[in-house]
Image (cartoon, rainbow over all chains, first blue to last red; front, side, top):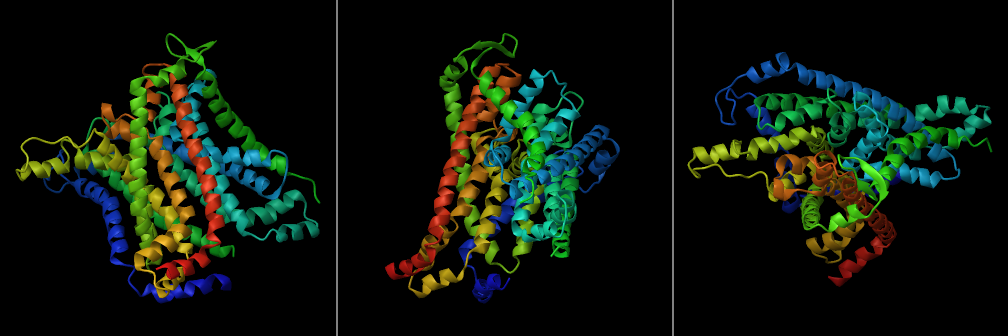
Length: 276
Length: 292
């Protein structure tokens, strides 16, 4: 800890100084650019008019969103279900894999590790297309189940990465100590490795849930008739142009994102502090 | 030493990815060497037709267009992200600023695309404002061209450039800049010869994180683009679902994968030399000051 704080000291001194007008300007530009469209959606969700010109304040689009958009909420239900199940399965598989890859040395370890990270690096559309062709070859009916399989596949590398990063931080002599004290492999896993890796596992799970809720491209290829997710539903809506109901939905999504972002930062912080 | 349990731990991940990643990708590779079926699918007869079809001028044009969009968007994103993340990393409110960047990044991808339809669409806000103020008489089509695709690509992937750059710059020892200034380097000179070489790892990560999704883009050109701003992703989808030429869809997918893999390999080489050279940075600090 001490070693870390020392080179930071000059920064403290510098923090009072201006970082320069150029970088401030660029940062402000970036923030305006990122937020301007979102703010416009929020404002226009309260618009009475169906078009994008201001026709007075109204909550009618929220009413329509909540009370007469049944299929949208059904898609949302599907999304939530797939997110939770695929995140759970990928967290299980990814965590075990991370422990194995990090602690042991065996044949093909490097090859397995490299392959496991590849799905993260190749374009999404390739994964979607290859899974579609694969499922078609197996005569698999495209359904929520194929979406679940696809989501678990692209989630595993992220869980693996996050959990391995967490394992790298910790002192593995405690594992040796557990063995020396007579712990069996299973006991060491349950009582030492998993609790210490827990913050990593938790953030892996959260990332998997977010990625699954968010995914459009891969889901687009592996979904069948009647198996819509929220992003697919939004896609089918926006293809027909601007709709005020989507403005209202956007506000709900943005609000949900803000809550999630703030919450997950605090949860992760809390979990990390408890384990230190 | 205890028994090696490694393979047991790794078995689930290996089996899963073999089934749902390695085998499907191998099928694509195999299909790209087959003959196309009459009503979609493939005939199991080896042929190079799918690769010959790549020479087709339309597909060549689309490949060039894809590169153009991806490179331009990446360059713009990274050149904005470097100063912006530098500002964030040095600010007292860096955690808050980080949250500010993460929120649009986590907001649903399609909603972020949709926001631009609401702004730039034919009945969008921009057109409405211009029409009502009388600057124009007929609406202008801002969407459905390559520039719109580039703009929205930048909008959706900009946080991908900022986040890795921020985490690299945050670890940078800013006193090095001060040292360079003390030794007589100008502000820009110090930035160029001390900051930039030291955050090379972050820059390469940012380039890759933005280039890969921009290059394999499908949804953005599909929604925001027009027929002459098609990208490779759109051709793959079209060949797969509309024209039903599966071997061609597979061969284009292979082209996309090969270019991406080449990018990743280059990145890994560049990154390795970056970490090696970072060790010599402190000496360079002195050198930069001396040269100035």
